[in-house]
Image (cartoon, rainbow, N blue to C red; front, side):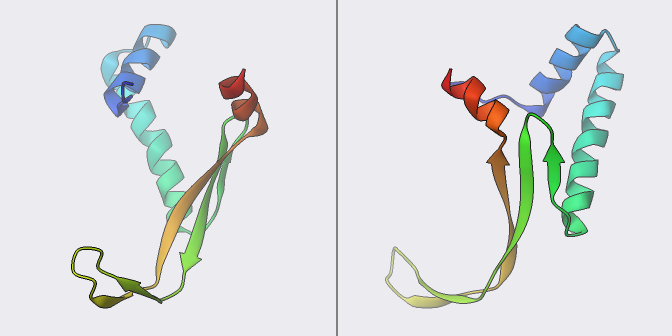
Amino acid sequence: MKTITRADVAETIYEEVGLSRKDSTDILDMILDEIVQELVRGKDVKLSSFGTFMLRSKKERAGRNPKTGVAAVITPRRVISFKPSQTMRKTINA
């Protein structure tokens, strides 16, 4: 299984749309930056036929170091979760 990188996506945009490589990379960067900025603002990002990026807040909780077994406190934080759209699920499972 191959991992698709940002460069791979930019190259696909270059090949399919016909923009220059620099323009393709710039457009991809602008899209990804916009997604990140909306998540930083606390908003969910829904991309039709793709899925939704959601921000969740996790509370402080007790944890344990798996190597040493020492108890530790896991600090509160925000995490990103992704829920694929029904269209994406159907495509993947077809």
